[in-house]
Image (tube, rainbow, N blue to C red; front, top):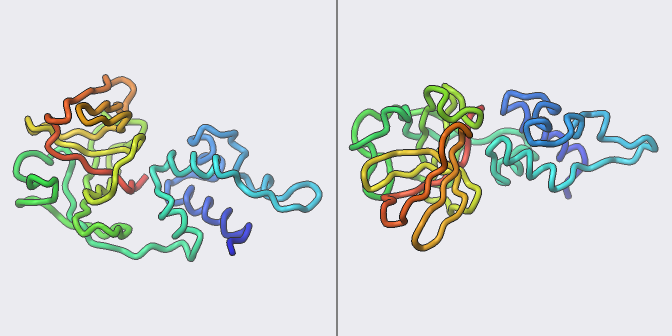
Amino acid sequence: MLTHSQIWTALDRLAERAGMSPSGLAKRAGLDPTTFNKSKRIAADGRERWPSMESVSKALAATNSSVETFVQLIGDGTRSQQSVPLLALAQAGGGHFDDSGFPAGKGWGEVALPSTSDEHAYALEISGDAMRPTYRDGDIIVVSPGTPIRRGDRVVLKTSDGELMVKELKRRTTKTLELQSLNPAHADRTLEADDVAWIARIVWASQ
């Protein structure tokens, strides 16, 4: 049975691993900055206050974290480590992926990051400010080709012309993909499904 303390501790750990205070996490999630403050966790009459599912969901979205991550944070706060291939996103071009979108070729390094269930997972290091405020220079994203993709997920995809991009999936049909840019200064994209060589979901980010 989950306890009041476990849930709030997991939220504290979620904020900490994203480099924020609980109030900073709440603000980034579009909530009142005091939503996750310790003073809000116990009512005036001594009753325990629980965070709403909506607020937890928004916190996970704001940190690009999965429910699996939150469940692990409810436990002892640790995640097993997995060594995955690492490459600078700016260098990720021809020859670094096979036709399925799996890491291939030379130039890959290695980094120990939170483990995933996908043996083909890999990491890309962000450079520059083109994806602010979602990702910043030096952030590392873990990409899982084997994880199902849903609307609203952040993804890495490669076009048949060799263009590699990081976007948010707005809508996907049998014929087209509608993609939202992470930086509002950049235009959204719509691609024909036949023009996409492969697409993979981002499952974790060091922020």
